[in-house]
View 1 (tube, rainbow, N blue to C red):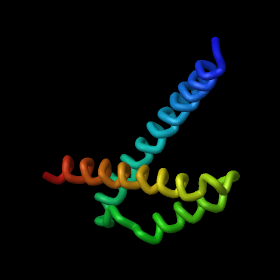
View 2 (view 1 turned 60 degrees about the vertical axis):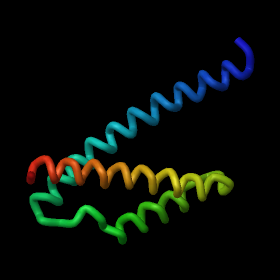
View 3 (view 1 turned 120 degrees about the vertical axis):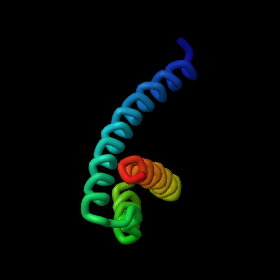
View 4 (view 1 turned 45 degrees about the vertical axis):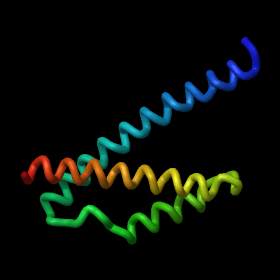
Length: 93
């Protein structure tokens, strides 16, 4: 196996781990959506999103990746809000 194939195998392993974590996150997002629906809370909590992004920026080890990590987590939060929206509208037609 050549070097590129080895590197790609590492990426494949990381992707599997990331998808497993993504699924865990989405499971919690579903619970949050149900809580928000039950308690008449809005999906968007800008203060919470700002805190999450700030935390990501503070824990990133390689500063070259700070902007990319922030963009990544913002996209994950958009996906999370879309899922919450679907759950809330599904249960409240």
